[in-house]
Length: 160
Image (tube, rainbow, N blue to C red; front, side, top):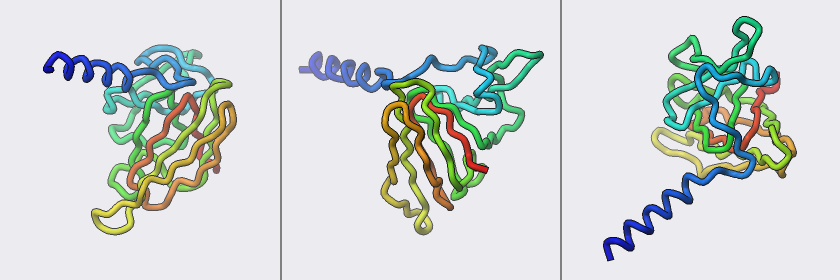
């Protein structure tokens, strides 16, 4: 019976780690990034390391941000969940307002699940928005946002 439980756990982990449709390679520190992603930030799977696509000597590369508290109006997701803190928390990483997510591949879906603060210690149920494959997603990031989970191989841009 114990072997069966371990086997089931291994299968569960393998399924949970399977790539999402439209997933892209994980950005690596120092690796090249597309000029279209210039100024965009991303987060590595450890959920602690942020990278920013910057022009360095005429080449665009994924580099560590200058600030220990990264905040951006452009984010690149490459498949797995990217969790960002909103204005309802200290050291926010994403601002409220209108955003557009642009799929980076024809089969990519852009998805956002927002949790808002309703009162001290209380959150709203997740508000989920999802695009059709290859189609942009227009999204209003909520004021007093607690967190947002962004998914898909998408470039997220705040509307100015």
